[in-house]
Length: 300
Ligand code: 13P
Ligand code: SF4
Image 1 (cartoon, rainbow, N blue to C red):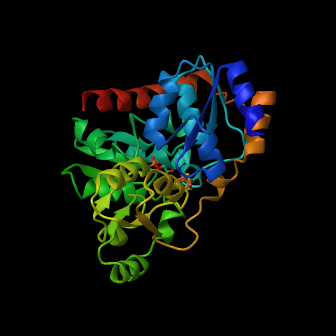
Image 2: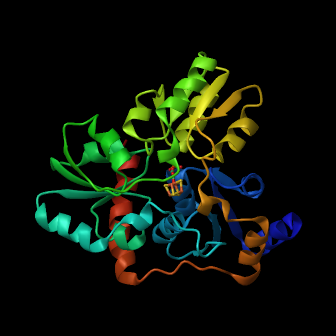
């Protein structure tokens, strides 16, 4: 299967992008593995005409919005993000109406339809920088209340939180992190900002998944407690053979991130499925929010 995938990739001028949570065999065959921000940038810059996006739908949609001339394929049609699906359009419209002086910042973990209702987009890697760059004082932050809360603790902006969350990061408990830390006091604690605030208090660093990759690389520590979806540990082990990693919880697994298999990638390339298509009006609106994030990032 790997041979055939590689042959088709060349023949079709395709590139395989994979998120850090993807199963090991998918990460290993990908041309590029990264976090949401990295993958969005990579997708926009690639010379390839087809992007096979191994991740969840909102990530593939972002790639399509930033590179509309390319064919973007999501190998598993129903690979969604539970947090992105928590946004109720009417509720968001209502919040906007009640706060006409607020700007709306949406986490990249949102559907294209939600992005179209927002002013700025951000990822876990640049949420604080995006919020700080906005001249207005009042911000509606959607949908992750934990990421929004974490940003709120570091800025004097008035932030209205939407009640969304990630069920995987919610499973990271303060007690579990404490227990591992008392068994391995020398271990550095890295936690994703989607975790609950009381858990984040125990982190040495609060980072996006690529932030964790970079921190592990440059740290002098030999042991790390990893507070995010367990798929990242495959990449961390592969890139840091001398270091040891402990997952900050049992079964920190995002079901949708694990749906993609080699077979699905092969099927995607053979059949050009499943193409990401977005209504032009939604696409244009959503692009504004994503583009603003890219510009802020460039200026940072
Ligand atoms: P990153 O952008 O940090 O990779 O996170 C994406 C995600 O879905 C976290 O649950
Ligand atoms: Fe969505 Fe959570 Fe899965 Fe990330 S880990 S894709 S936020 S459900």
